[in-house]
Image (cartoon, rainbow over all chains, first blue to last red; front, side, top):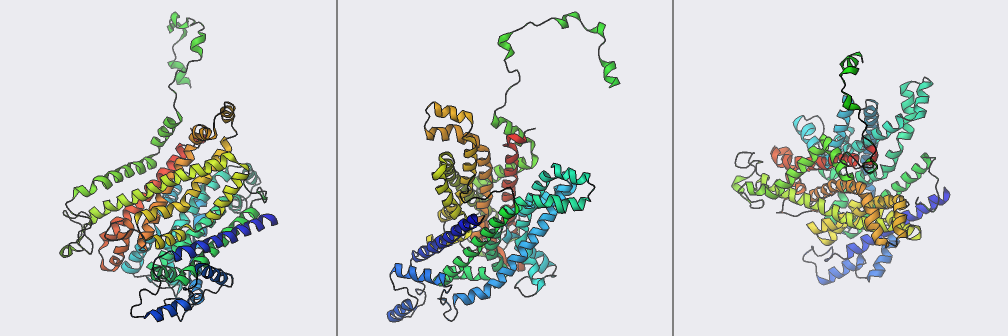
Length: 310
Length: 316
């Protein structure tokens, strides 16, 4: 077990370094410097600016500086707004994005699992078909389309919920709805199919024979095993939700990290792009790591070994 | 039960010649009387029975036809601006209305279909080729080769794919080629994993050992013995790759990183139409959004249907 965790930990570090390196070299292969757009600056000012951000150094020195900045977690000032450091942006944007992400994941998990269980219990019944049609629809409608639809209905036509920004619980309803529907649909489908499989097994019959209440059988006996496939795809779902926040934050004008990320790309703001990318990928890779560990802890049938594979 | 018995002919009604012995015919004893179904015929037969999946297939065929011929049905150009004609509601002249630059939404929708289908199919095909080669080799060779190749996959798998796609788009500049390249950089991994798993399982079967003992080369065994038997899961994976790619293209175009104006793609059209939530020109958002959703829906149900049809274990 410890061996496995150590191995996964190293893979995690390598992945983050790979992303960081990739980001660095990709950013520096873009023609044009971030200062090109500022007209009227003399050559001397230009050179001074580049010296300040270390852009006049040879590439390997810049790379070393960059790796150092990752390790010390200090990405320096933004180029577009020099009075703000990248850390400022992250510490301002991250709590909001984090809140959105956590609420979305919880909503998707709770409602998706509930829907899946109900569908499995009413297998081939009307409710089952209804829930599964709803689930395929949820997978098929892109989150940005759903976002505009819910704004149109709830905010513009009915005027019952605010359409933008992020300040009160009422503001959180629509973005969460738009972002959580897709993952919820995926979870519901998975829960249903694994629940159907589990419910036919002998130990469930045994539990029924013991005279346990159906509720207790579902919650205590069936659900535990039925959740395994859901846990495996949780990492992918979290990745999807994370990138989904870019577009949701754009549509709902939420001042989260995704907004800074998209803006920084349009502005060629190297420190911000690199900072946010590395930050995003570290969170994501860490989540995948946690999911893997959780999975191996939850399923006693998996004998972990350092070799991996079959 | 009783009724059946009364309907049976009584002993006297049965003519004698019904009881002639037909004799033994050793040659004919082994003959298969019923027509035999190949794997593909059987899968197709079962897919035909799945109404939802067939609905998806029919929709996709119609969409492909409209993507090819749809723009010919109207005299309007997808890119020509016609300012006096802006924001017209759907009418007999403009079936889906016009946008804020007076462009015909009907024509633009079918051009968008071309782009979406092209991106989806191209991404699926490239994933297919890289995935089967990589997964096939890793699964067949096994041992050290496999663990090195799978370590690489494991590291790449951790890359957040939309983040990589966005970075590549920033560097290479937004274009159709860039989107496809960016989508396939990490897209082949899922395919490679599936092929590897299947190949590892099948390579231990006797018919592969027979092939090996005849001295068949590795490439021949992979091509002739292993891949045909892994085709089911591969096709399902491809069908499910297409909607992912279509979604990614629409998502990126929506963020302004995808196809650039004046070209039409569903994501671009939806992004342009965001302001219509307030102005009430609903058709500008409705049609691209409807077609993105319907196309993804069709591919998803078709993929589900194929999954059931191509799995011999689910045969009834």
